[in-house]
Length: 368
Ligand code: PMP
Image 1 (cartoon, rainbow, N blue to C red):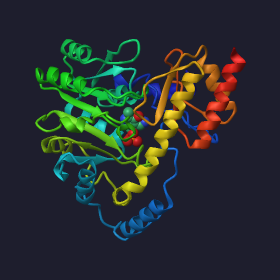
Image 2 (cartoon, helix red, strand yellow; image 1 turned 60 degrees about the vertical axis):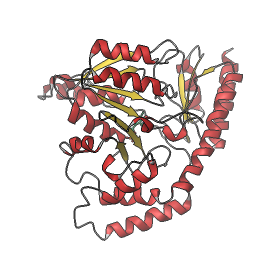
Image 3 (cartoon, rainbow, N blue to C red; image 1 turned 45 degrees about the vertical axis):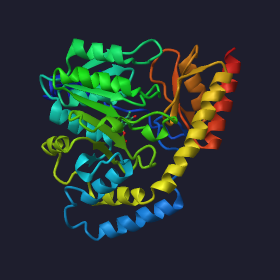
């Protein structure tokens, strides 16, 4: 134990937080950052200007608390999502991480459980411990796929209070069929449990992949979460949101901090939503690089998963840690999630993607 952890252990910390580490992909300052699935394309100048103008206007109001109900933002998010959603169906917070935390605060807590299917987004267990909710790790098959029958059977066995389905899944990249979501929802109906579909990467999905938004009508316990961190290139602005029945947003209002969404955040998100077309044009460019990575990895004899997201998860590596290190030495950081034989890479700009693929080919060559 080092000095600080010794000192930490003297504090009256909650028992279920003892020994935990905070979430943190390494933030290493290298030229090519492909490790946390950010949008690698800078915001278009016109959007930067629109945000600046909107934030300047908001600055004149900063002596007052912001609109606690962020009414304009909710209306614009509903418009963006479509599917006949209205402002009453929408809730937003500082990143979809905070949205998920609020969901666990409202529907989880001591004596309750949340289930997800690993490997999946590593924040779910941490959000569970932060809210004193028991985390249940469901399983996937050896290709990290999840079938409707398996998911529903596991839910019936464990009877969680909340199920989180990550689609497209992080770190594996593939979206779930709607049949999986329907089957899990049906299994959850037996116990009145909530079903959350985390669609952080939905805008990057392959043609034909359908969003869980299409299932919301008549499903009171279904929540779809989204974020502006990925497709909208606004990870630094911190804006996540959910779509659900209006009474779900009423449940969240019971746990949210008053005025949790600053006037600056609201202004930034509104400006971005006024420029959806410009921003989503970048999504298409990223998908081109994503598909290029998948094709090239196959040529290199590796096994990329189907990607509905802005990153590619790939197996077939003898020594992922050595490849990770070799890439880092060339100024390129990717993600090692600790899953044997695999790494995960975010789709970069064209130049970044080329640098990654070329260096990877060299490293594989040298290893053979
Ligand atoms: N869900 C998934 C699956 C993610 O990968 C991430 C970010 N890496 C988030 C949610 C949280 O994103 P944010 O808080 O920036 O909205």
